[in-house]
Image (cartoon, rainbow, N blue to C red; front, side, top):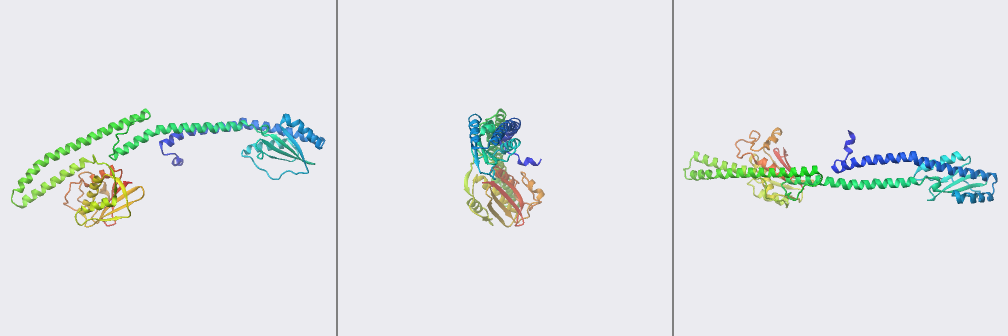
Length: 434
């Protein structure tokens, strides 16, 4: 439905809407029926009464149109009927009018005076806060009546509106406080899940709120424990395998070192070097980022230091301005170095570009190599995948570089994607939140 785009997106906003919308509809309905069935009727009766009094006073004056008659009428009407009358000889009715804030009041009084009087009249409900000014044209000038406002309009309407608004405000404040307290634990749970996904410490998180939210929090903590045990067991297992295999590899290296130089022995030595590289890759993939915390780093200096560690030909660095970010330096260095190593394996030139857009930092590693077809880019991120058909054949490696780089970037709360480069090859784009 089109109106869905205007609905609140947050739980707090939606819960507040669920509570406040029925209250608002009920208050408007009550106010509407009150004004139509009660206040309008009472106000109309009061206006009719004042209009009738004014009409009678005008008729009595016309029977004897003198100043004495006006004074006698004022003496009779003022004390008990709160309606004073005076003759303004030679005056004419005003030609300008001012409507009150509640235009209904003017309409009701105008209707009552029109039904009761045959002479021209004029009134003003805005000039005096507690009185109504009514003027009637007569032959000698203008009869001016000053009536108490309570005699013309029902004052209970304003009191009703005041309490209606006050009750709405109080209900809104209570609802806001209550819903905020209910939404806060959900926000904390979401923040803890996001922090856990980035490898941050969430030991201070404690489930709170409604029973369902606490249950979700406790389930999340149990899941974190299971994931932690799984990672620990995986790391321990691969570390043990790596250690166990390094011992016979070392013996084989020692044995081959004592052998004569030959083509077969050289090939065997290279096989042992490749096996050690594989074991190192396996261990790096399993070890993850345990133990390293984030810290503020100048990204230009950070990338420059990585480039100095690269073999020739080193990548060029393009930086638009000084950019700082909170990162895990050793982990992110491993990710960037993996991307640079891949680029140097398959291309002659490599370029690193650092930019930002206010919310995210972008590190692009580009090359002029053969690239990777778009249909195989997702497959390239799978562990132990080597897309030799998309790049050059017989390149050393175990197919873990992109997998490790993507895991590291995701733990930073970012993303790694592959795209076409302006240089003609592949572009690996790292996005990190500032």
